[in-house]
Image 1 (cartoon, rainbow, N blue to C red):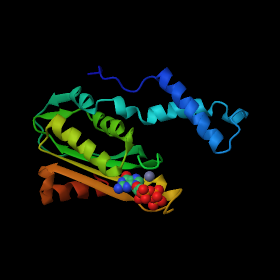
Image 2 (image 1 turned 90 degrees about the vertical axis):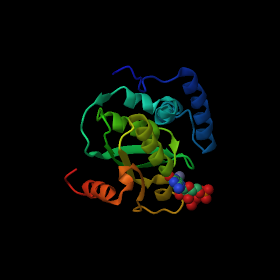
Image 3 (image 1 turned 120 degrees about the vertical axis):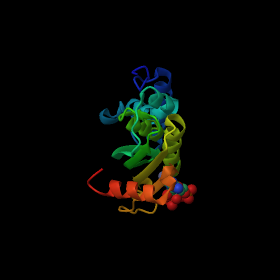
Image 4 (image 1 turned 180 degrees about the horizontal axis):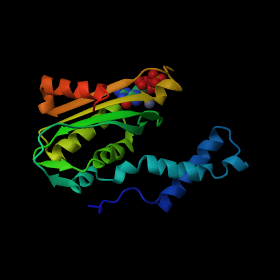
Length: 199
Ligand SMILES: Nc1nc2c(ncn2[C@@H]2O[C@H](COP(=O)(O)OP(=O)(O)OP(=O)(O)O)[C@@H](O)[C@H]2O)c(=O)[nH]1
Ligand SMILES: [Zn+2]
């Protein structure tokens, strides 16, 4: 454990390239890039963009593999209300919300923090909510090989709120189920637990 590298530093060359591109964007939208408040903005934006897409060069399976423990626990493990922030690949605007994830171990449990870390790796990429849901689901399924895995994501999309259709209250729910969660009783138990105060 502990050998996996999370996001630590900005790549100088990438920062420089992004910085000049952000300067061009700011000029194009009518900003005076020499004014005080905005002087460092291209560099800040360059770093923010690197962080927000840092999942592109991280290996989520390695995160799980680094903290799998043999354990004879055969019941559902649920981690709910995992906050997530991602960028939609169509408009490069944020979508954000919560992920609820469950798995049924098959000889191995995984360190609890690693599940939200996997969510972050897939969320810090340009995404659509459907693919984000399936990326998380398949990663847990193929790496941990549990008896079942379930992922539900509820999210609001800024591209539907600040612009475009301008709907402030719509929430999009996506879900995926594998293994024992494909059975209606198991799936219902999970859905009931994530919507109660118990889980
Ligand atoms: N399925 C899906 N669609 C998304 C997601 N994020 C954004 N979109 C949609 O991507 C679509 C892109 O449609 P286009 O017609 O090419 O783009 P647009 O003209 O900007 O569309 P409007 O947002 O309707 O103004 C829009 O309908 C967005 O709502 C997502 O995570 N999943
Ligand atoms: Zn969008």
